[in-house]
Figure: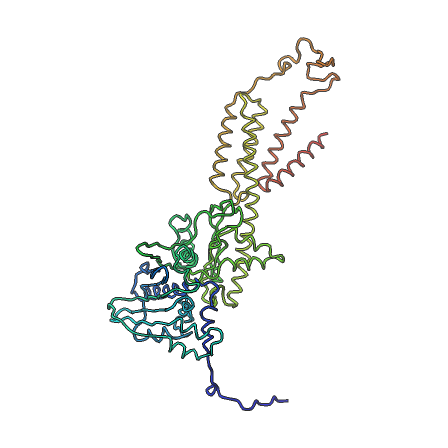
Length: 550
């Protein structure tokens, strides 16, 4: 049976579509979980404008600059974000700045491309002002939004109003003189209110900027050059921009948070190396910090491997945690992710950040990357963290062994078999310290210190004089008075036997021989097995050999 045709159809041209004022609430307060993300939107737009200026030969590479200034008074602070990017030409500035979701930017070349982020500041200030000028224009265009009025349109109980009428009634535009060679955009959040007041607190703002912005690493971060090298070998420019904050006369440059050590509870997580990870096929690369992994890193701004698109952070630690949770039925690997630091740079143009920029839009390309990250990055972090726990135990055992060997070697003289035993034990410990696969995450300085101690101890033992034998039977096998009496009246032989004729001299020799054999077997096994397993297996082998001999 043929389906009946619907009746009374209306042409789309005849439909009356109203986009009400409450839609603006979704684009402002409803868009971002963290109010500071509105600052990121303006920095992101500034970064795009600077990259456009570099491509147009208006700026040289490295000359891009963003200045974030705290202005106004303590009671009524303001924040401005100014860049030296392309700016907007007078002919299209107003239309561009008042339009919603009509950006001409593309995800292939720009970090922001939806045309909604510029309204993010409406929720946090009294007036949102844009001033912009393009190179060659003698004027700068100014567009002001009355944020208080706009918020009143989506306050509880307000009557819905067409969004175009809201923007028209709440916006002023005018121009001012500018230099022909000026090219800039300045965003001013005048009269910060509500949660926006925190924007003027640089102790809060600066750490946020360091976490998310596309800025350089600190000069003191030992692995910065290697990361840049990874990027270059992968074919990525790893673009950055110079960002400064300014309050009164004080300026401070913003750099990424990464450094050589991080608080981990009462301990310190020290980076000893970084491991590169990448996939040319699916378009991503990055690095994982290798440390002593003493526990969860306390600084939530840097803990966990972070994802970046065009060098701007997407989301936080939650992305890697979610991926780790999916690797096991119990989700237990999730908690291990905050033991590590690192970055994943997504370069695949088919992988696009979502509108909130707290994750990526679902796509086949993103799903492929997710699978690889779980297999390559998550599993590697889990292995590193668990191996580091074994390393700490091994280092403690080696340190304790050195203390014990030092006490043994502290005597003025050593018997020959004692020297052999101590030297064998030193060789075993040196082999353990020379095995990077067994000491994952060990502090190289600590390892070097222990190696130096062992070598010094070996030299001390080698130079020790050999003690003269105190066995009177060494020369002629007997002494005057081959037998005598002990204090308790029992007959005690001086020929190395007890009163019943049993040989007692071999007991000490057997113990020394057993110890020497154990050290040799343990040394061989420890090259392939963890110390604990090597110890158990060495003991079993020696016991089996002794049983076979008896």
